[in-house]
Image 1 (cartoon, helix red, strand yellow):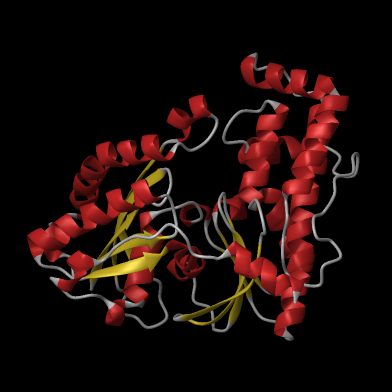
Image 2 (cartoon, one colour):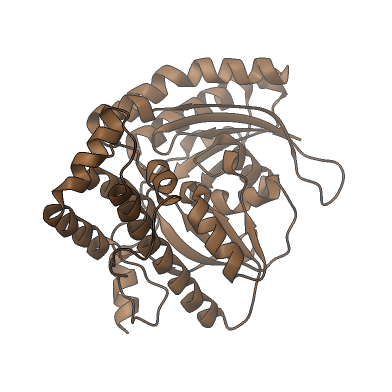
Length: 359
């Protein structure tokens, strides 16, 4: 079976073709995988602008599709199934990818499978290695921070989430406060490697809450107050970014301490999630923030059985969408019924989560 995966939920345009491995227990073969990131384009705006992101998807989808099929030496009519992200995400970008998938399905009379790309982030571990169910899933990305109990490939139970910003947002918005530009996660991680993570104290949101719920609004406010009281750190950051000057120790220590607060919150609430489950399970970590070196080290030091999705499959990508579709091929929507599939931008009802937290 050959599966086409299309991912356009936010600002990454990504296409992949994978083939089922005939050997049981072996990862599928990635035949071709092409992506385009809008990071450089969106730096001017300091973040993702949905309309701009959607228009760039429109420009890049056809060239990426052509290149992917060329690299795989395949034609669209040789695909058995089309997997496409339908939720959650930005509606404009989602619809762009959805319409591309429908066009291919219409021209070649192929079935489609709508994919929740949050589930796909965690199940991307099967592109690298085979692990057993159930497992505990930690999804950390720019838009989501969620603890899952994954009973099997069809049953994902939400244990807890953030009530405001995700970990990735805390990195990017913190970087903006410091003057490090967008995106800031990798920059903060690199600077933190040479900093003292105990130099400054930043708060952990919902620290005493016994549920695996996160909050990053407080740590951002604390950083803003810190920058106001220590304006030199922002000047140092601008010199580092704009003038390519050596990063000051003040900047390194600030990044290390701020990152420590973000990671400590994730580890603390991971313990709460484990307590809620009541037993030790393998831990799978996926999403863009799973690439953070500080988070990886802390989890390796503190968890008995942790599995990280490989970095190339951590950010939004077509391979994880194709992989998820392959694992759920029996649930595909046949042609022509698949042409009526639609996208939706939400996955979690945060109001409902807050109500559950208060019970």
